[in-house]
Length: 614
Image (cartoon, rainbow, N blue to C red; front, side, top):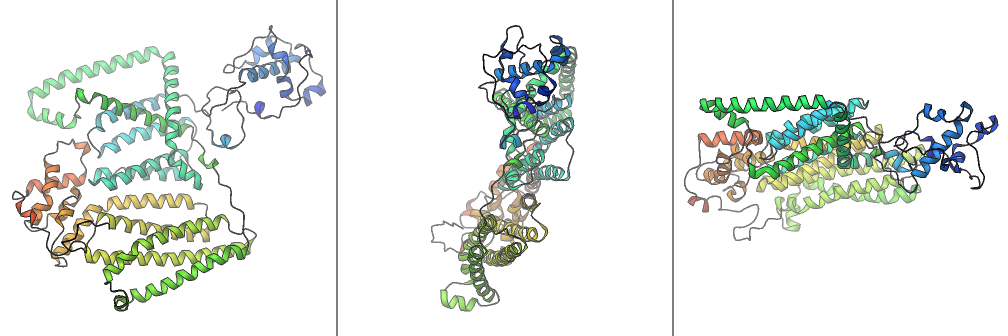
């Protein structure tokens, strides 16, 4: 951004004729110097005279240089010549949002770009550079063998780089920034705890979104939505910022850089030489070094180089976003045209009546009316529950969309309009909460009959979170909607964190094993539970033989015979390895063709095609 915003933002007036000469040494009259605008001087041909050199846009003249060629009374024409030179040099060049030089030519502080464009960050500090370098080195060493506690190890120096850059830029740590940052680090603990890939993926994506929000500090709907992905916008500017900072530091401290490189080289040589001698002298020390050092080979060179570049670019982007955050809150959506009370309220009241009629029937069914339902439809309670869950989930999603559109075109005339909006939409939210409870009850009945699966626990968690969103909307109607966007984002992150901590694969195995032990199910679905992650091993270990060995055979091959380093092993995988080492699977798998295949499977007969879309 330009350091002189007043020059380009002043409205230009009609310039003088090109043929009218204006000597630079002639001072203005007091009246002219007070009332004339700089734009009039900038448009004069005085800036093009050969005896006055044009100043470069990136190197503005100092006050001494401006006054050296003219007497004290002629300072105003000199400033006009400088402004005219800048205008001529910047003609036809659009101002980029990542402008570092003062007085960026052609910049205009108008429109959305002025609200979004960050200020030029200060020169990158040595603490930031060292943190960025540590992130790149740790990414190279630890991220090539899997995902576990290594994500937390790499995230710590990246967070330090952002902290040092923000402090150098004068930014203060605010409560919401700390909330986003701590939430992101907590989500990165999920890969270190759970072996299942799907909650790990959700946790990593959510951690990235929270980290981006911590760097940008957004609070509006568009700011929270776009700001969660805003870190991508800082990758290229961050690299440029880092290169310029390294050049500036290297030009003034070549001797210190040389000493640092020599010291590092000597330390590495000493470590390699004496470490090799000690490892060859003692086998236990060699095993310790082998377990601590990352596995790397020459064939993995391109992959390790890519990880180094990824860590370097990511840390620089985080540091740049912390020093010069884009103001994503500047992205605004224009409110819709307010409608009349009757035009706005009548459709919603009809919808509320429909919800009320449906809920009345649901209460009758939930209170013991399944015999009537079975007599009219021929469905038992589990089939009845399975049939309606997805429709109720879609009804909840569509209701949230209706609420958003209704708020956009809601009447905004005064207190009576606000009372009407709160009454109509509040009633709709309460009725939708009952629909959410009905959907969850249907899922509970179906799981009780046929067992728990990944899809069922996922959609149940989704429905539960939608209920939390409805409660937050109700609270916003009473206390105000200032914190609603951030509160919904926090609820989503908290849901992902709780989902990972509860270990969904472990819950699935526990529920199915419990049903088998209670004789609720005559057989356990071996074909399904054998594909669960290592998080399910503690529950599956309670099964009798041959069901236990059939369920754990694939997991044992993945856990016991995988050469995974310590930093890429989760706690769930380590616990499964300990259990399987004490009590490995038995047999050769021949009994698995008969185990777990009697009776029904998830409500389907054995002669079915095996396809279960639910």
